[in-house]
Image (cartoon, rainbow, N blue to C red; front, side):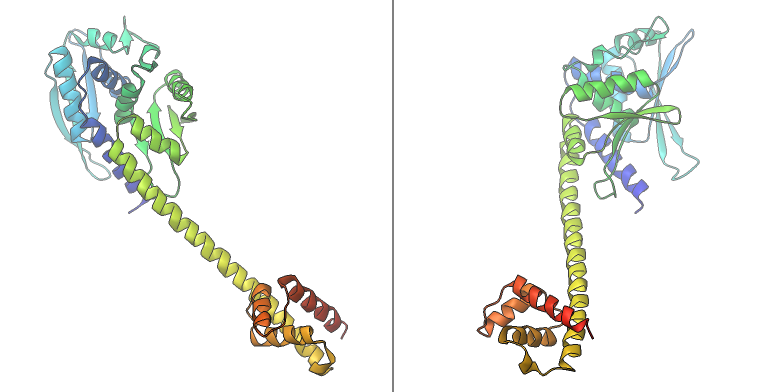
Length: 314
């Protein structure tokens, strides 16, 4: 599966999970619908004003439909559309057509007197997590933990909204959120895996958070094992190369002198190296000690360096 498909699949899982949570209190429902409307709601003003929402996730469509109906006693229309491009997935269109539209937009702190309402009150401690849950369902995305990098984002249509959300996240002292511009959108994002897991938990996606952490830990373990394997292979390659150089030096000296010309420790090192060309200095020291001759790793290194100096003269 491509990274793009993994992102879409995991992000949809997160959205479906938080859409299925029980939003019982007025504060919860108000925050979720406000966050979703600010990002996803397309407003049409006129004699019969309307708000149109679109989502590919059935549980999200059901939630928005229920929130509007329960909070404002309005039954939205649901229209089913099929995307003509890419995966031709189903799009659920929830259309709220009512003279109460102005009242709804004002109460949700989205628009008042035909003007956008600055995003302030929805970002206090009481409302923030529910606003973010709605905002994520409307314009959020998160990489699957098995992807090459970690990234969670929420897309806003204007810089002011994005900046205020970034500052609200930073004020919790748990998130180092940042903002970037991508074409005509402003993106609030997190890149640290620990913060992404914390954010998922914060908006209520507990199961997704646990799956995310489990997959992330597994991925990190595999990466660490791979790094250790690479390191071991590199060290082995170095030992083998060094061993071949040592053997060349020893053979060059033995072509001119007999083994008896060298002291006992040097002879032991020479014999150990000739019979173990890929062993490290530490391993050679252990082999020599087993034969009853005490020598340290640095002692082996010193003797082989001395032999190299002598061999280089020929």
